[in-house]
Length: 544
Image (cartoon, rainbow, N blue to C red):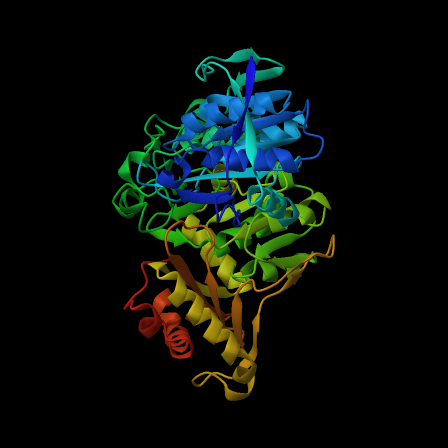
């Protein structure tokens, strides 16, 4: 095996965001672009030589080609073993599970999550550390610094590895092991949930499910677990074959992009549970018959009912949510007498809390929910949690959620996304908003007295690290709030997210249309930020 040292120059902008480095496919296809970044990762990892890394992705366009390149880079940089999912496939939570089971040094996950795929779509790469979770900022900043100083990379001249054949291939001192990407994950799910009870309910017809894999990575996992192991009828998994372009769709499980599932759940004879996951399998959407469960409500319901399921029967140590996520789960935590943590957006912020044993469940409003079984959010895990809950309680999804509202109150909640807006305009809007914050508590906003207005900062209770400028919060005295945040998961322009929340304890007022209930907050957000004028948009791109 020959190893070449290839001269190169830095590419600007190789700084990973909240979920790794994401760019358009055409950017990653530039000569040396992927090689530069991976070499920068390897150069920044102390003690990598001879160690094991897990490698795989969501199957999008460029996935297989990128894996072959990374194999050759790993062989030239002293990696001892690569564990790769067959076909180059690993869902993000399954990769986390594989890292943890094998006690691997870390892993490389190839995905742009819920972003579109195909030759004109997006691609991404991120590094996960030995706990199975996304690399914290001290790692990603080191990767970025190295990428801006890199002068060469090392790559082996070696034939391509057959990713469709299970077993080992030796490339110099590197062992490349191709494994079943589903086996470890499916086995882990069997330890958390009552498969016998779920299977019995599915077999009797007391329970039914339609799961939309959106032609993304979760298809093989859902087919194996839902149809083969649990016995759901064939066809219970919709769009189950992963495709490089996600079948031309947008693999984002929300009411707009999962329209086929929404229609099926609204028609006659709809299944008891509808669910979907995204490109890399870490997000979820939950539907009952004609009923949408917000991610914030889903997290709260899971926390309130976790004791009914085998994996969580002994209770929860604590819960955590991202700052923009509604406070619904906080009310559950208060009643259970357990701590509730509020973190910045990004699953990496939950890692320290999970590792320290401070929390068991965590979630984000962006359709992400998970627990301490892995260090990533986990779409199919959330679906199985709901399936198990339905099998135990024997009630429809809507009844479970409405009884939860009666017990804890309802947090009316919505997110308005303005996608692909001009980045300079978006930054200007946020900059001007920050300038207005000090005066808002005295001035108020419309008819609402403002209790606080700030730019959220987080001090990690485990290691003391501080993360600033994590989103603008305007909180009102009645418990309502508005949050403004620029998303870090897109690749083109900027996405402005506006989060709106209002708490309603009165059961007689818990059946309002969500957008009607929040209409005065929508008007207040427009008044304080001037979104239409600043962005040129008359309405959000997506409302969830």
